[in-house]
Length: 172
Image (tube, rainbow, N blue to C red; front, side):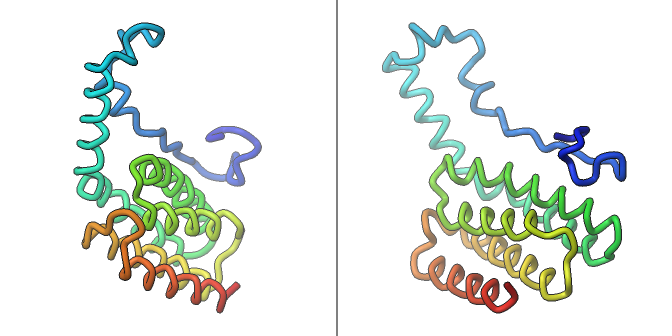
């Protein structure tokens, strides 16, 4: 979609595509014969170990992405074409991170990022109130990442989502 007419910034600004992370695929090996090799007990154990490893490093490996998303929000606050470009990049980064968090079972992170994506991609312009809602999404992600809130985040996760949903409803 990077250079297609479906991109809202087509011919207006340089855009960047964020590819899905293929780290696990690379570790399993491209030489694997899916019909014979992938369902052996050794391969299943190897895959499970890779998933466990990905879960263990999810927060530390992806915290820089959250930091980048905060920087994009700061650019959005400048307004104009920069706002549209940064909003598009922010939504694409959210999709990339959502797929990882969803696959690895980080429900709270997935829900916040999905909400961020929907909120960001449903607007072509952003008021101060809209930017506040996006900021709250990123603050919630920062709390989840800095406190390594796994799964739904327990009581803390429920309170974070409730607060976020109330703010979204207020400025909807």
